[in-house]
Length: 209
Image (tube, rainbow, N blue to C red):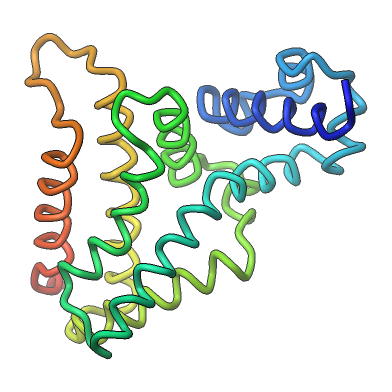
């Protein structure tokens, strides 16, 4: 197996296992066994398990971040103060594009995002770098202008909620395995419902404390 193929195989295996088992529940040996690589390959290509997680996360998140930035650029080219619904569409829309209904890869991306948001391991909290920070700060600034009554802390909480709701919805759409609940909406219907719901959630009055 060529070195580049080995690296890709390790990334593929790690993405699957991290999404299914979490960071601490996934061993380097399990990753290399699934990838068909030797145990030293993770150290050679990535340096450590934590750096492998960062590489997996960036491979998944960077296309979403790029689309989010492009969407915000288009909005700001039209007006310096986009409406909340337009900002939610620009932020959440790429998540639907990268996690299409019925697609196994999209469902795996969704599960990985849920894991990144919820896994308690410190390594999962610290993988982000300047690129991810730039996207976050740009959207926080734009939402802050549209929703000036919200504190930065509550605004960030709600923006994280957009990520979580969308990722969980995409996982459920793929699995469609609950006989007691209506089938989740796929395609454009689900996207429109989500944008409407999330825009309303973002626009809710500040929480009184």
